Image (cartoon, rainbow, N blue to C red; front, side):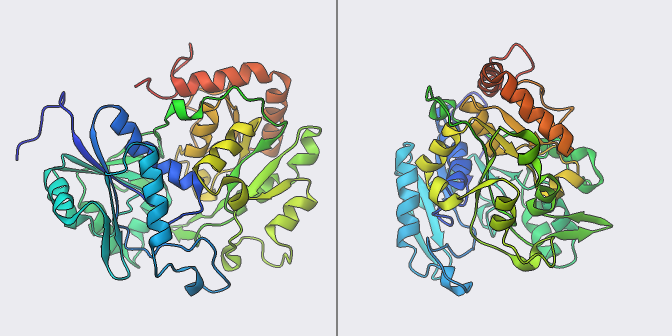
Length: 400
C-alpha cells in the first residue's frame, strides 16, 4: 500500500494510558490532547490502549494486589467518557490484558482501522508489543520520559525487550529537546518535539487564587543508575528547595501531592516524617492530588484557579540536561498562568523571562517568584501569548 499524499487526511492511531489511570486527570489530558488535537487538524484519528499493564482501581489498599482492577468496567467507562467528550466516542480501542479482551470498536472495525492506518503515534512508548501493529505504514515513538528512557535502553536487565520495542518504530521524538545532544542518545536520532495543547480548553477569564501551585508525585518509580549517572525522582530535587516558602513570604506556595508512597525509593533515609509532614512543617500548603485533580474537570479547574505554577523537575531530567518541559506547565501557560520551573537544560531552547521563568538554585527560584508577584499582569499575558504562539518574542508552540 503506497503512502498517501501529505496534503490528504491521514488515518492516525494514537496510544496512551487513560483507562489505566482513572483518577489522574493530568494523565487523561496528556493523552487526549494528542488524539483530539490531531482530529481537530482534520485527520481521521483513533485512540488505542494496549499497554499490557493491569488497570488501577480508583481506591486500593496496602498491597499491590489491592490496586489491580480484575473487572475493568469502571476504567473502560472512564475512557469512554473522555473519548465522547472530545468527539471520539466511537473511535477508541482498549485491550484488557488480564483476560485478554478488547473493548471499544467491534472486532471487524478494529481490524479494518489497524490495517488501513497511515501512522501510529506511540506516546510514551505505551504499546507492550508494537510489532503486532507493524501493518500500519509508519510508526512513531514519542519519548515523554527523557533520560530514563535512554538509560533503560542501556540497562542489561530487560534491555533486549525494550530495544526490540524501540527498534520496531520508524521515527523517534522526545520531549527532551536536548537529549540528542547528550551521550544518553546513544546513536538514536531523537527529534525534539513538544506536547500538543488544546488552547480553547484552557482559556479562562476567572480570577485566580493568590497561590503558586503544582501537581506532582513524590516518587514515581525506582531511580536508575548507569555509567556513573544517577537519575532520581522529584523528591531528590524538592529537598533542595524545601525552605522556599520562608524566603518568598508573603507569596504562598501549594503542592497537590499524590498519596501513593514508595518509601524504599525515596532519597531521605532516616526521616520518619511523611513528605506531607515535611513540606507542611517547612511552610508549604499540601493538598491531596486525587481530591483536587482526579478527573479532567478537576485538574483543569485546579490549574485555572492558580495564580502561577512553581515546580521542580525529576532529578533525572536535571542531571541528564535533557531539555524536558512539562505538559502540565504547558497547560498553565495556556490558561494564562505564568510558570516558575526548574531548568532541565531548556534555557537555550525556550523563550524565558516573561511567562516562563527558570531556576537552578534556591536563590533563583525565590527571585523568579518575586518577579511574577511584582508584575503579574505582564507575566500572565506573556504566558498565554507564548502558549498561543502570538508572542512578539519567539513562539513557544507553533500556531497550528
